[in-house]
Length: 285
Ligand SMILES: [Zn+2]
Image 1 (cartoon, helix red, strand yellow):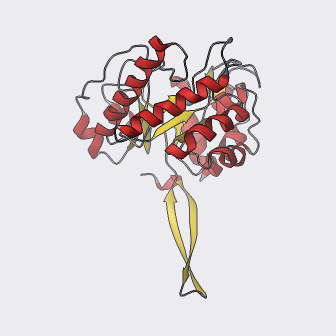
Image 2 (tube, rainbow, N blue to C red; image 1 turned 45 degrees about the vertical axis):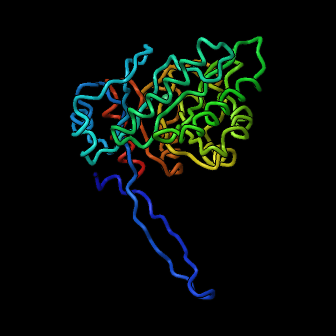
């Protein structure tokens, strides 16, 4: 843990015997880290970077592979560096196509189990989309069914963190009004939320006040993907950039980091990740 990351005081009041109250000040470390580029040695990657938290895949993200135990499971579980797992990109639980939705459901359950085996705090799953000729409501219902069916099997092994996405007009979690509809369906199942700043910006959602706006919908932010964007506001393009050369004001990114009260993962291009992390240590502390 890095003391430079000491960033917040969480103040809670507890009522004592009705009239008095006690103020408890809890110092919390802001957790900052990055997506792992070296799948074989995730903790080594995190240590070298000075990360408090890392994000990793449990399968080749372009594949439908079933996860196998990570050879360094013991080291990952024992490390003070926290882990979150990002699910594979093929997954689209909203899809109306059975041949995509069914394997997606299985993959979410399998990858959540693999995430639990690594002691991960959650599994990030993109909101997904339906085809342009389909009703958004059907995709929302497919998300509800994902949770409902798994509930009958005892729930997922780790919290599922639904991530907002940047593109398309039939995305489940691009525009915040869509996220509100999605949350009406999945919120009661304990779905978590992952806010990606690049996706929000490129998706056409302003970043000023974004934390309050999304929390008013979901009631929570469990993880932040803090990325700048290569493309302009509302471009619909999902291309991450380092803070120094992206189109988002880095101060705005630092502000999201400060206000979100959640672990922060950089998914920015490898060459500039260390610089992005140093910027946050300096501006968020
Ligand atoms: Zn992301």
